[in-house]
Length: 413
Image (cartoon, rainbow, N blue to C red):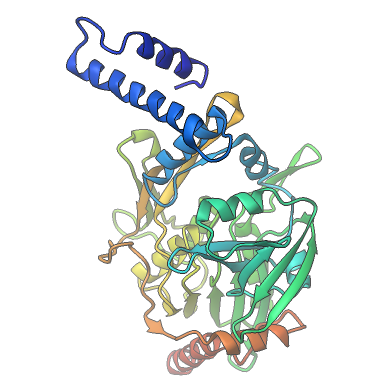
């Protein structure tokens, strides 16, 4: 309901709380509006500091969205501007993502984009963000922490607690991040042709100088794989750890490149919704397939959304062995709807599922080969990694290399 209409309705209720002839459903609705007005007046009168009705209405909308599921949320006009800032092209930012550990009320770094200010500043996935521009974040809830991040200017200072307990302060300055999501393409074992390629996020193509330039993750992935083929690629590791998702079609296109079309079709992912406009089935085609290289896909607790779609499709069709930790289990698909006053809601409109339904509560991906994560070892390796190449001492990578080595030797691929 519009913020202009709501006060008029409430004022009408105050003057006439019971309308003659009103149906039971209508009277119940009117009673709810009167309760809202009574509550608003109570807060205005008794709360220990002044608060505006605009703040109360924003809080009510935010609470309604967060009460639906963990992905739907209300966006203030300021949050809408930040969220929609040139999402498909170069992005002005710091180059890291964070997530909220609700059990311990804290924020942690979940992903660092290569070549970004965060990467240059030495941020490492898993670091606890204790303070942001001298504002303590410990014991704040998700909304309060998110509001702190939304109010950042062109630079910020983070106080981080690393896995080994060391406290560090890092100052970052916003910069243009034009990253297609693919990094670290290399051959790990030249004698066997085992390649490695990390995907940090999924983005779509963008418009540049009035013409379409394919800057999508799928295009960058194909170029990287072609480069590895020139170096004798015979098996491939796809690293999706820390990948929180992004553009669905890029993930589908990459899965399609490794899957063959069989019989009635090979399902990559299906979108399920009560609204037919949000329903879709993405199938593998028969004309876009790489050779049947042995594949390993690396996942962890921060692998989510589109990244889970890619890993899940390859796992469901027994096309790849999945190595690492249980994924995040984000199967929700959101759409942004604008509201009066330039605010918006990000609403879950559908869920996705693959060829095989997940049986656990959050539909997370379970690795075929579980590899525990040692945060201290990860921190040490991240600090001493200067070349941008994958760390050969990484336990998860080593396990994947060992498995692919055995496969290549056994099959003679």
